[in-house]
Image (cartoon, rainbow, N blue to C red; front, side, top):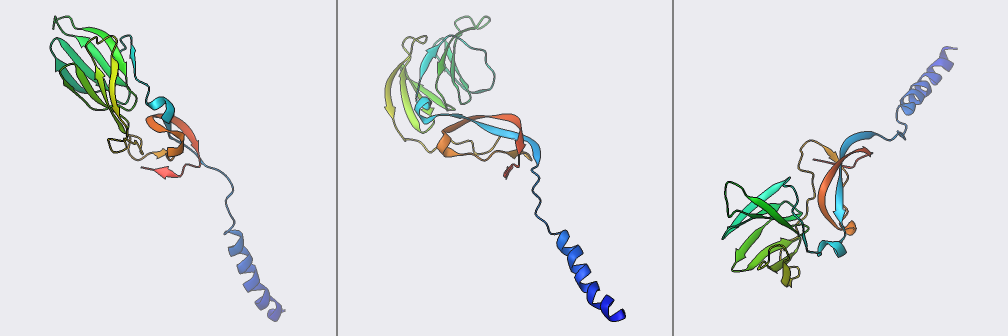
Length: 177
């Protein structure tokens, strides 16, 4: 009997250890962020739109009585500042992926993801594309959400350009920042 138990004991320990090495097939759900994409086809669409509320602003540029305020990754607000005590938000220029602007004369230069665009702003309520230089700039990717110590859905460049991040519940997130 002693001989039998000395043979079974190693196999019993091995069975206990083996059972703890199983593959965990349960998925894990975590709060995190998923990228919001714009297709590469829609990324180049620039449009004059009615005034919109300022939300997440960036750079500011002043020309004559107008103030141009960047709305990060969305475009540019046009504000009539003729009466500084009563500025009027008069238009919005939709430029997806825009973070930087400069003006010379009546031409506004802006980044449109990787492209550099020159817009005629003679009529700020109805701008026109004067020129586009494709792939003039390094890629303006947002590979990570702005928050730190968070899980997120990894960026898939084949889906287009990232224009923002949305808080969601993720299933088995692979990326963390």
